[in-house]
Image (cartoon, rainbow, N blue to C red; front, top):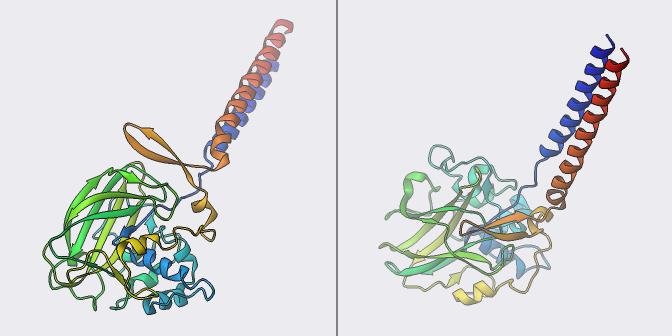
Length: 315
C-alpha cells in the first residue's frame, strides 16, 4: 500500500509539472499587423497620410476619408496596415463577402468597414494604361508568402460595391524583395506589374497570403487611368507626385498605432527569405522558463523515485 501511495504521489507531481509546462507553451504570442499597398496607395494608407496633414483636428480633408473617421474613429487609420483576417488561409471568393473586400470581410482586429464605402471621391493614384509600374506593398511585418494582384475589369463602375466577379487576376508574386526598414511607414516589398489596357476609374486589389500561417491581408487602391505616372489627387494640398506622397509622414513616428503592432520586428534569414519575429519579451522568456520547468520536472521525478526506492528497501 505504501508503494502504491508513493507511485500516486509521483504521478501527480509529474503531471502537475508537465501541466505547468503545457500552460506556458500555450500562451499565445500577440498578433501583429503587416501591410497594404503603398504604391498605388490603398484607401487606408492614403487616408492616414491625409490625416497626418490635419493632425490638430484629427480629421482628414478628403471627404471619403473624413466620413470613414466619423464612422469608425481614427484608430483604424493609425493601424492602416492591419486590414487582415487571421483565419483566411488563402480563401477569397466565397469566403470574403462581396462588398467587404476592402475590410478583410470585416474580420480585422480593427473596424475598417467604412473603407468599403461606394463613392468616387476617395484619394486616387493616376496611372497610364498598359504601363509597367513598380508596385510597393508595406512590409510593416515581413512574412513569407505570395501576393495575388487583381484589377477591376473593363466597364467596372466605382458607383457599385466591389465584388469578386469584378476582378481580373493579373499576377502572383512569391516572396518579392524588400526595401526600407520593417515596421516603418516607408518599408516595403516591391515588384514590377504590367498594367493591362484600361480607361477611367478602377480598383487595384491585392491579397497577401502568408505561407507560414492562416493570416491574410487585403488592400484596395483607387486608381484612374488617364496618362498619369503615380500622381495622387484627393489629399490636402492638391495633386502630389508619387515621390511627394511617399515622403508624407516619413519624418513622423506613428506613436498611436497599437503597441503590439508598433513594437517592431526583428528580421532574420531562413531559406533565403526574410521573416519577422515579434519583439515581445515573453517570446524570449518562454524557452528559459520551459528549461527551468524541465529541471523541476526532473528533480521532482528523482525525488519521488528515491523515496519510492527507500520505501521498498524498508518495506
